[in-house]
Image 1 (cartoon, rainbow, N blue to C red):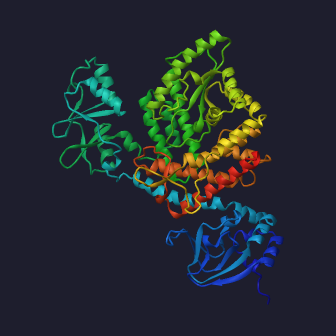
Image 2: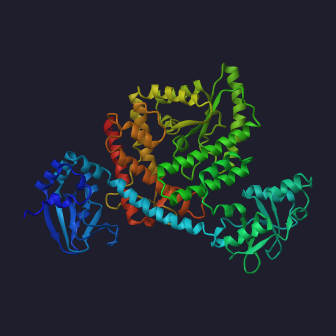
Image 3: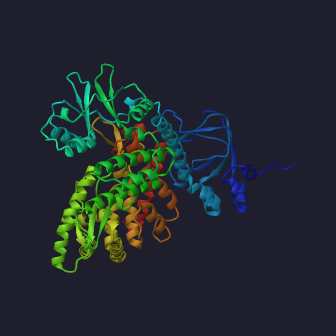
Length: 626
């Protein structure tokens, strides 16, 4: 009886179970076998460029990042291959692979590995999907982490003190009503508590109380708060549970509870909305709350629900592309509602106009930490009408910008907002701007291109934005000099990969090493994708869509586009995780990822993601001979 060939033995495992007959024959011709005792090092960075693919046929191998004292990254079992990424990239392995037990393996030389990539579509798909498989592992890990935290956060057994997101705002009972209202506005809170000299709560007033008791009751604002506040407000000990609060609110018909410590001092305020946040807030609920909001305060509450629903989506394993699009969609809805509310005070029916979103919102790639980048395009018949329309549109836009700021979208530090006359322009003026930037690509023009060439209309006559895009592409696709300078600008930031250490990092005020994943991560993909889109006339705003659609063009994203997109989305996912969870208490954070806090799998994928960014930049360099 003839023993099965090595290739036939491997057919029990993916991807060899899908190999073409000629690929199996090739394997039989090039595979060798080897045995390694436990504790043997099979591959390490010290060996230089990877020269062999290992396929485990017996035993287990531990993969750990170099310099981590053997801390486990992945366990590799029978049927699995390594080091795929190093062989594909013709580089040294980033990991040390050590035999945990006695190991038997099939060995394929690097030259044969690359021949097999060309020969077998099944093997090529497996290797190019390598990063995707790592990202999938990380997402499963994140999902388990988020789901556990989500379950903990959403339990009615949660202590009320653990739901407090910020210290309570307190005054004394003699505080004038006007000052109490001002304090609510300053702290963006819906209530203030009156306390006595010992810090114990003796009264409460809410925004709705102000309307009913003060405004409608025509009470002078100089009167003391004690004249209109609710006396002896309901309290619970801070050790009580969410269930206790739900029961108290339901049985007493109230919407706020005050928490007190063991000494009876005020320690927090729990609202009906805080308890609502314990529920799995649905997309429909959030959208309806936004669309029915009657004022900015209601929109502020709805945006907190956006963050909670984003948290729930992370717990359900939703990917970064869907997450950022979802956040952008709901942020659009908030902006639309603010625009509608302000249109009640600004009559613009006689003007043909559109509200434009630029930057990350224009690309539908907003994370939970974002400021404003917006503008207006409008139509005017002559100079006199243009000037008259602009005055009215600017007054409207400035009110909208202020309301967006109150809702948590900070005013743009660079003043790229519709309330700035520079960005409230007619269609012809926008066309002239684009033409000037493309014909005279000075540093300021290139900077503007990185912001203003990522745009879309989110309200009004969207056809105006379409006409802006058509004009932009008619100029950019025909101007190779502009493309080249934009490409040079896209290469000014290199992927933060170290020659000796894994990463090139910055240090914060405490000396902790971090990488800014917006500036040194996502931006690398965003800027390169913009160059490709403008060069090929691809009318897509999002980075992933730009990469996908340019892949079919010579000089576009190429066959490895899937890995590029996986890398970009992984960086976006890390940003979302950091902003929503790691900064604590649901407050949007920054883009600084502290390398020391990443687990080994995350470090491994982040390195691979940066290598993909480097490959994309190399493609741009080749296209423009830079």
